[in-house]
Amino acid sequence: AQSVTQLDSHVSVSEGTPVLLRCNYSSSYSPSLFWYVQHPNKGLQLLLKYTSAATLVKGINGFEAEFKKSETSFHLTKPSAHMSDAAEYFCVVSDRDNAGNMLTFGGGTRLMVKP
Amino acid sequence: GAVVSQHPSRVICKSGTSVKIECRSLDFQATTMFWYRQFPKQSLMLMATSNEGSKATYEQGVEKDKFLINHASLTLSTLTVTSAHPEDSSFYICSARAGVTNEKLFFGSGTQLSVL
Image (cartoon, rainbow over all chains, first blue to last red; front, side, top):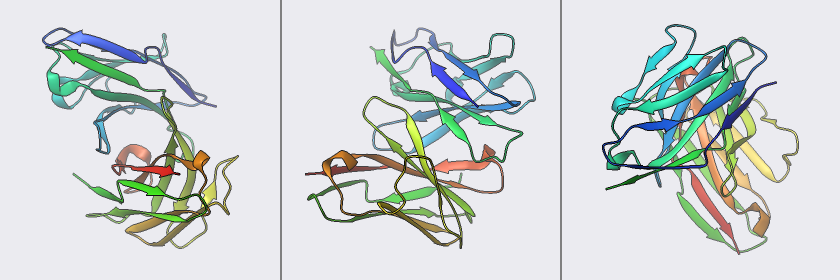
């Protein structure tokens, strides 16, 4: 079984300050981990993914995440927030050794960016 | 990148009517499509998985007679909410997979269904 916990339902930062969105997971297999962003009235967009290569993953728009197996975490970070980063973010786990159908979504974190 | 088109983006209907939602992969063939439902302030929950040309596989607790899924071609899957009721009001989102792993998975923009 797999599960994902996003520790914060809402995060508010000021423009230009760092962003940290936390994600912890559990998985019976070697997981693939993803971060998706959902802007209003738009589809989910893949930010980055971890699939057993480098543990520090760089994504689009300056985001990155580090896979820490010992902590079962995959936190999303960005050095400097931009107003356009305001959106809903989902951490997702997929059991890589499984059939491949099972995606489990975290509860989502709404990021607010203040001017 | 690959694009998945979902239509309509928003629909309001009366209780007892049926609503069809379309999900199209625009520039790739999607052998597998997924349908998710998102309740307010909750995460996305997988409803069913559909493979082109075969019956959809529904997750536990999802009524297959209520949520009809058709995946007749490699670029189109439809979800029909039959005899909709207010409790069916939700955000529905589809995704389409290019290849056999979830590493090439693309999402539609979602459909907000409101049943009066």
